[in-house]
Amino acid sequence: MKDLKYLAAYINPVLAAVGLWLGGFYAWGAVIFSFVLVPFLDQIGPVDTSNVDDEKRMELLGKRVFDWLLYLNIPVVYAIIGLFVFQLNNSVMGISELIGNILSTGIVIGSCGINVAHELGHRKTTYEQVLGQVLLVPALYTHFFIEHNRGHHKYVGTEKDSASAKKGEWLFWFWIKSLVGSYKSAWELEAERLKKANTSFWSVRNQMFQFTFIQIVYLGIVLYFTSWAGLAIIVASGFVGILLLETINYLEHYGLRRKKLDNGRYEKVRPVHSWNANYQFGRIVLYELTRHSDHHYTASKKYQVLDHHDEAPELPFGYPAMILIALVPPLWFFIMDKRIPEAL
Picture 1 (cartoon, rainbow, N blue to C red):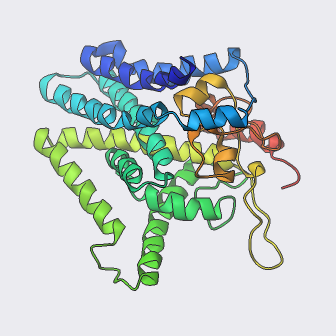
Picture 2: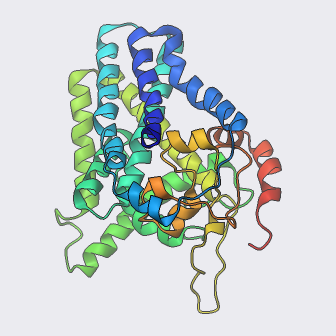
């Protein structure tokens, strides 16, 4: 039964579906769960820094259920979007109800879409990478597959990475920097890949062209089944998912910088270059994303066997609570700046 604990990650889409179907106060269900209940459960629950032994690790890696729990998010995410479109066509939503549904759907796109796409994008099999790309489409953030794997993981904690926040950097400026910088970087990285392969930038093999076309088709399908206003609402939900991702990027590496060596290169990425949060419930609903230090240390490691590292800096609260704190920069700086390891 412990293997099924990650079913808790489906609470958000269930609450979002209930909110879309019943409307009213229920539209805020996923928001309340994510940013009220989860922080509360994180704080009253134990902090788990234990790691599995080698025998248990091999056992967990051999169980396909952990992979299927990820794959199932694809129909779930698209079903939520489909239900939202259906309700936009067949009901009249009040302002509060509409905002609640946009935020709740955005949370699903962020947690079950982008977050799971991030995990699948690091897999070595082509079909899993494609599944990850499919999950990025509702957020209109397919370039993340290129930039994150080939850019962020290479340059994390340096000036070359727009997704690594500097000490004293405001979240709202970071959003702009990371949104623009990651998109620009994806085009540059793809151009570099094509050049090495002796292929024209304007080739159909350019993944950025492919991704752009797929996103346009997606928008066209949404528009066909709803209206321009409905399309704007669905896009707004995707943008909420994007901002969740970028806020998590902000807190995952805030103030943690890699040293530049005498040869001009940066030191190797170590666990100390990412913030961890070992609060158990938050770990489960985000498929262990909060054990981020080990993820950067060994990017190909599957979520169910990510380890805790003693040298990794720890966030004072779980991810959802830290997201809320980041929205108040003076409070964020007061809490976080003194926690940045002096050795960096």
